[in-house]
Amino acid sequence: MLLQLKDVFLGDGERLEVSYSLPMSDIDIRGDYPFKSPVSVTASAVNRAGLVELKVKAVFDYTTRCDRCFDEIVKHMDYTFTHGLASSLIDEENDDYIETPDFTLELDEVVISDILLNLPGKILCREDCRGLCPECGANLNSEPCSCGKHAVDSRLEVLKQLLKDS
Ligand SMILES: [Zn+2]
Ligand SMILES: [Zn+2]
Image (cartoon, rainbow, N blue to C red; front, side, top):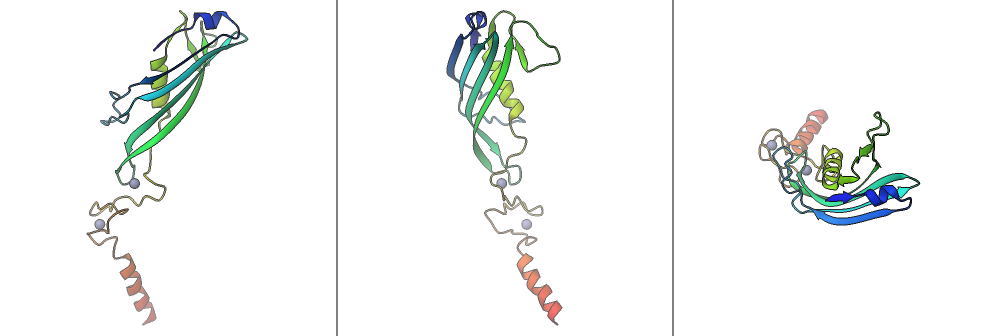
């Protein structure tokens, strides 16, 4: 969505608000398409004493795989981002500012890059995910391990105990 921000830039106290759905289903992250449903975007640009601040709220479901057991999980995400907008570049060192030389801003690009930069690198299906058996690949959250490498633990303990007692 292209924001026309001339009125906001030129009038102290002026604001522009938009809310819309942004489809991101064609965004490919390492071969996966994690944005199955559109991202709900609410944004406002407000001129406060000559400084224009853009606030973006992005709410979406993120479909990914658990980093440990590879089960598919859907995480509900709720992000808020803020940026200063500048009609000319104020400070080259400060890239928090987005330059809007012709008073227009392609909001989709901002939202997409904000989301992609803030996605967590690793997500677990649950805090205590037990992952996969490194030997047989069994998902240790849901099935006993068939190779025995993990299931024997308790029997081994008994055996050790017996050896110790004898
Ligand atoms: Zn898991
Ligand atoms: Zn196993």
